[in-house]
Amino acid sequence: MPLINPGKKAPAFSLKDQDGNTHKLSDYAGTPVILFFYPKDMTSGCTDEACQFQELLPKFKRSKAQVLAISILPPKSKKKFADKEGLTYPLLADDRVNDNKKPDPEIAQKYGVWVEKSMYGNTYMGIDRTTYLIDEHGKVAQRWDKVKVPGHAEEVLAAAVALGR
Image (cartoon, rainbow, N blue to C red; front, side, top):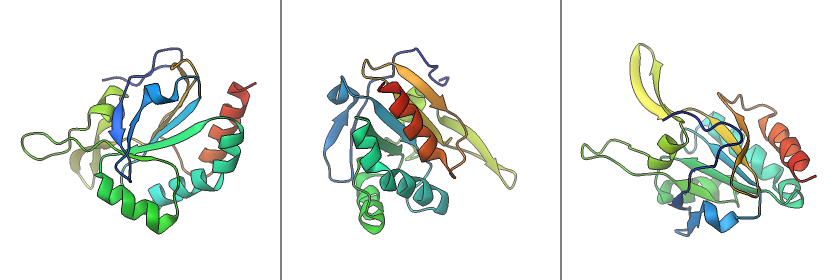
């Protein structure tokens, strides 16, 4: 599926976090949501990105925005990642698998971030690092594609603050 463009309604979701709690987009109605998709728990780039959001979490809370992160690994992996890095916001597990036991993440597909990638001549499916800022009405306010981690969380924070004005 294609990426969701600003102005369009964000697709609904219901996913478990690192503590087994279920989070739905509808739970955050009336609140801006930062939804960032990352490829894999405990890899260097994903750890750096997650920790940058954690460091800025008090500022996100002041902007009234809720930070949520999504990747394809199960809640147990998310728990280990959150505990190791001191992450206190929800890490959501889009961990559905197909009949062949291959990842088949429903929400990443709905948001257009489950894409074919290639490395060393091999192609595979994976998450394209993407962030959505969803406004208090459930519509995409802004989207960042092919995210480069350095400075990204600060850029998202600035957009969240501007949205709240």
